[in-house]
Amino acid sequence: MTTRGVLYLHSAPRALCPHVEWAAAGVLGVRVSLDWIRQPVAPGTWRAEVSWQGEPGTASRLASALRGWQLLRFEVTADPCAGFEGERYSSTPDLGIYHAVTGAHGDIMIPEDRLRAALLRSRSGEVDLEAEVSRLLGKPWDDELEPFRHAGEGAPVRWLHQVV
Image (cartoon, rainbow, N blue to C red; front, side):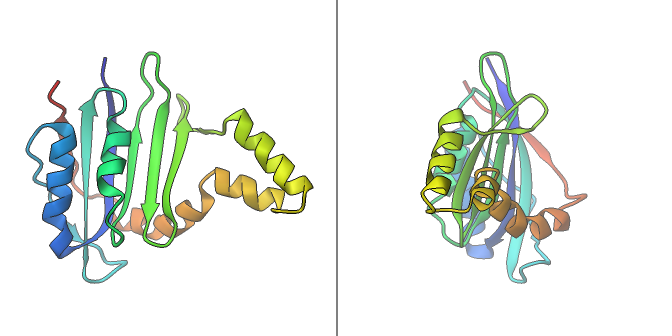
């Protein structure tokens, strides 16, 4: 069983680029050589995109392999496939990593227990419900990454297939 997804590397310092390729290659089991282009939103950084195909769980492994680099902005998506929901990981230096389960049409699906916890925390005055739901939907990550996403429109995308 396979799924597919995209690894969006929104911004990385030049010195980090080969390490990102090495980490992705370690997860995918194939050589990864990305077409890095300058990221105009953050001068001195580079961006790249790669589409991948592999077994379910690959997006999680890619996000885990990249999450330790504080200066990296990235997103990893995985399409749903038989027996598995889709997923999205977003990471920024300021916010850290965000994970969401996505449905067949790309909608974020918030688990019932997280919604119940948000309601409880809101009732106790610990959080504002609207702000908490916004966080559960990944809005702070979307807000920070949106300028980087637009800077990548029209960028070349290459397909990589995981070795299984």
